[in-house]
Amino acid sequence: MKFYKKGFALTQTKSSFYLKSIVIAFALLAPFFVYFSTAKSIVGIWNTSETFAHGYIILPISLWLIWRRRDLILGMRPQTCWPLLPALAACGFAWLLAELADVQVVRQYMFVLMIALSAVVVLGWRIAWAMAFPLFFLIFAVPFGEIFLAPLINFTANFTVTALQFSGIPVLREGNSFTIPSGSWSVVEACSGLRYLISSLTLGSLYAYLTYRATYKRVLFIVFSIIVPIIANGLRAYMIVMIGHFSGMTLAVGVDHLIYGWLFFGLVMFFMFWIGSFWREDAVATSPLLTPPTAIESAPVAQIVLAALSVLVCMGLWPAYAAYINRANQNFPPVQIEQFQSDWQEIAPFSKWKPDFFPAHTELDRAYQNKTQVLGMHLGYYRNQARSAGLISSVNQLVKHHENEWREVSSELRMERIGTRVLQVRESRLRGNFDTLLVWQWYWIDGQAVVNLYEGKMLQAKEKLLMRGDDGAALFFYASFQDNPEPARETLRNFLKTNLENLELKLNQSQSFNAK
Image 1 (cartoon, rainbow, N blue to C red):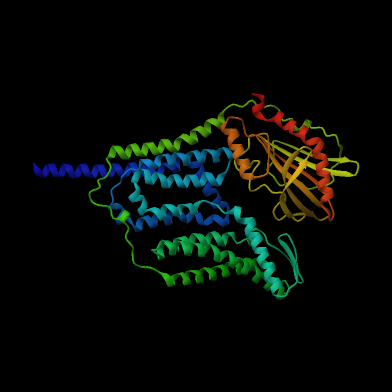
Image 2 (cartoon, rainbow, N blue to C red):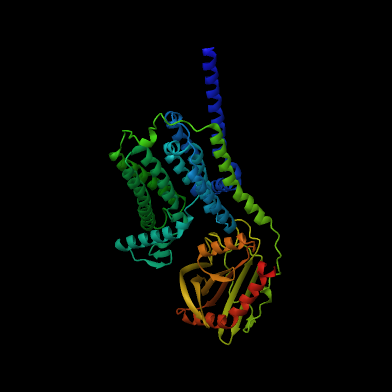
């Protein structure tokens, strides 16, 4: 009889273990099903961008890192962590705002954070701490970094031009393009070093975790893995220009350009890890969080089931509400911008330039003249914006990438007085084969003129959250100039002084919620 009771208790313990394991696996896999579209968008970028193709190996590496600690983790007992449930809900709400504003990278980061928080809520702090770095490493699966393209390109151009000048080679620079006696060069996206930086940071973080035990050493090496590729990319660009220069532009100007770059990067990574190996720490440091006292008992099955269901509710609420908002019926009035009439004389277009933006619901391309003053206007009105193809996107540019006819020379923010109001605009100078344009640009969202892209995204999220639709517009006004841009600025000021109010009236009449 005693043996039967022991056997029954053992069977009950095994059943409880298996049930807990199933529930925990369900909770940890739930984000992949609830946010399947977000996970799919991450994989889609891995498929189409060589810069982020490394994403495929991030999850397997994280699982391998957890497997290395399986003995430690299996020796711990799961304890639910309810205080982090509000943090999980906050991540879900942030995902909702990103969904409404169509900020893909924020959706993706919130998705990864929810995976980690789900583990903490269901498993407890101790087990989650044992898996801290593998969970953290998942953030490298998110395709993020394109925001650094412009500063990296600018740094590489500055570094290369300065190094050439120190080498005694005369340089004529215009934007990110420059000319030396042997030929012309341009620092484009492929020369930015973004791929090197992301690869170095990912490998450097993994190396620091596996090689060091002291936190300060890990942090220092990660910082080192950020600085080194940025400087190395400047040296790579300088080296390639010098090879081209001394070879009479016969070497490093084609496919070999890329080959030299990757060989140089491989050499830099080898020396970076070699230097890091001098401070290697093989001894495993212990942590009180990783040696739980045996008095701590595992949470009951019912408690773990309740935690898993709470996780599912916290995550599932936001996609459901986003779907409800997107299905909500809107009373859309007709777009009024085509009815805009100016007090200046309309003339035939004087320039072939057009911003490289996603197609709008309604577009207006016109040119106007008042005595000797001539300007062009392009207005794109967006409604029912497609995901990742809307008004505000990193893909939208004034000039197409690899454009031969136009290039953007400079860009800056300016405060301009238009009548009695002060208007902030982004002023850009575009140089073409036959003309130079001064362009003023801003966005119109929620009845406001906006230049800051983040502010614009927040206003878009606010509009959709309040069931006001997603209407918005991109406005461009441009005029030709030679050497002095001030006459072009005066032309733009004079036109907007008498026409901006009427144009904004047509925009307000078009906005969806005004018809309710």
